[in-house]
Length: 173
Image (cartoon, rainbow, N blue to C red):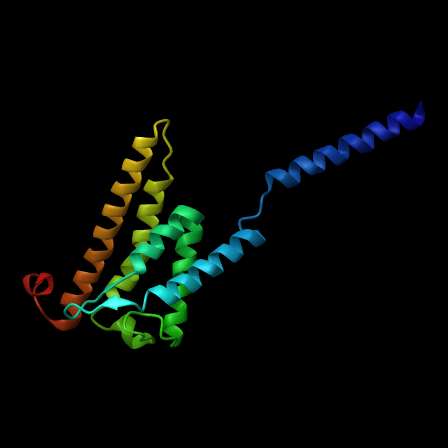
């Protein structure tokens, strides 16, 4: 009889401790860190590939950010992009045109690189909204991508105008 009471108390404490551990889930587990590293590497590989049209090339950075948002969620995808940005700031040639360094971020196209952070946050938050109907989810994803891209381009265009001393009309041409 004593052993059954003692066993029930130990079992109850064990179950309570297990419940507490499940509630306190880690933000980064191994799977998330591996996926984040893979997406940072994918961004480093695809972002330098760009179509050079005018002073601001069109790169594949947006596409990789959208994929990472879909797979990782907005918080982890934003951290992944910041890791990519830090790799470029250190000097690795991961930006468009296989360039890197502080000069690229401080240059005319640096506003786009900074704007992608806000694009990831806004777009990711809108992509995270889940509704009952699948078509509504798709609409939220598309609207999030459009608004996020508009924010990134607004940052980029403002910085381009500031750093080159041109007007908005010349920057949009």
